[in-house]
Amino acid sequence: MPIQLEGIIDYRLYEETITAINALFAEVEEVCIGSMLETFISCGSCYINRYFVPTRYEKQLVKIRQYIDDRNKSVLIRSGICITDPMERGLRVLEISLLSTGQVTQVVTQFTKPSTIEEV
Image (cartoon, rainbow, N blue to C red; front, side, top):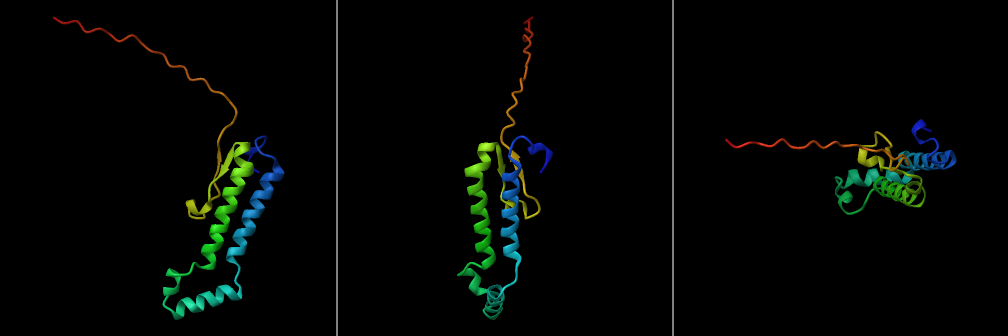
């Protein structure tokens, strides 16, 4: 767990969320009869079928997006963090945004009196 999240979210919730997201991505990557059949049909139809039927990969990415959205709404936003869908970052990172740290910062601005311009 990143140091910045300590005290903001329970370790168990964090670990549970990350483990579930990893499991969903592992499911996307596994090769099965369905994915092989989908590939053969796509090759045989010159990939025209992909315009009409979403692929197994696309369906799973929708499932991951829904899980992240549900998890954000039900648990994470209440804790003050939000997870961004990895597809929005090119599957390179899992972005966790701090919505609120609970610290109040004070900004002091000093105004100066504008100088007057004298007409000659």
